[in-house]
Image 1 (cartoon, rainbow, N blue to C red):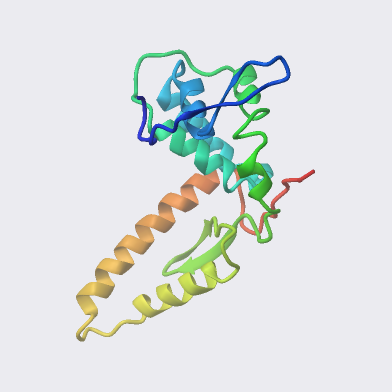
Image 2 (cartoon, rainbow, N blue to C red; image 1 turned 45 degrees about the vertical axis):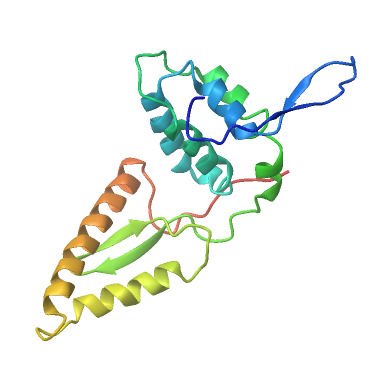
Length: 189
């Protein structure tokens, strides 16, 4: 078995022509569809798809795609074509089925700005809650205003780690030409 999925039994289902086998594990089927393609290319592709405001509402489908890709072993295989990629997003589980039906429109800003120390950084707050950047702002303010007492060393390390994470995220946003305050543009049918 390829990947880290638990092998699900195949379920026999009567189709219109009287034969057919339907899988009870569509994510394993996705892994099988991805096997002929280069895992590194697929990983960069899903990463790029997640940076597009048009895909903001695909917060279940794209991580499922990324998870399936993560189970593949890197090997010298061909890159996926645009047509094959489009085809994956037209069938279950990426184009229809339980993951797609469970997604809701993205309700928050796709990008926001967080000020920390010497600058402002563009971040991706996600769709979990509008309070995620609010909480981060207050955590950053707390570690920035530390006193050299009991928590001084911890706060110094936390500042360094926070700045490193913010610089990486801001650079990703900049390279993708995404500015702060960008609204999602995904549409659901």
